[in-house]
Figure 1 (cartoon, rainbow, N blue to C red):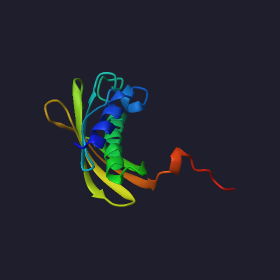
Figure 2 (spheres, one colour):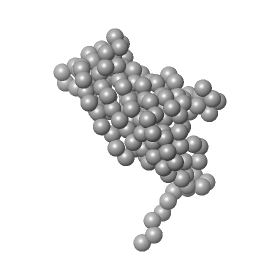
Figure 3 (spheres, rainbow, N blue to C red):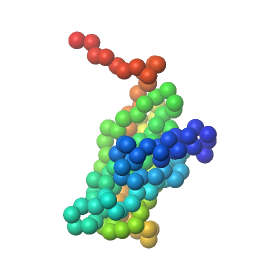
Figure 4 (cartoon, one colour):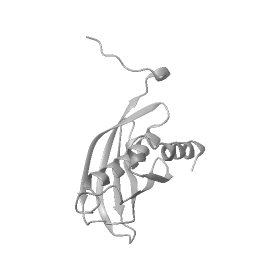
Length: 147
């Protein structure tokens, strides 16, 4: 892992104020081609005590978006434009692990396949995320629309 990738991973893991942090998502590995992270089932369940499908989507989008940002490079920003997910089986406890793998990395777009498994290695969810790459606004400014 490069120094930049390590810094991004550490920053991501230290922020409990954003959605991924509140859900307990932790990044274990991060590169432009592959991102691995975990999320606890506890606290991310639906009323029946099963892992909420939306929580799986948050894990998938968090991993894929991080990979997309690494793939796009430091002077670009990425935004998710499409996600789909198939939920294969329930998870009731423990941690789930997501592995996002780059399947397309272009100048303006990247797509990741994300496989989420339970602690026994059984597939819980399969997702695909596409992100658009945009040029970053110089100086950290914001875009303003012309009337």
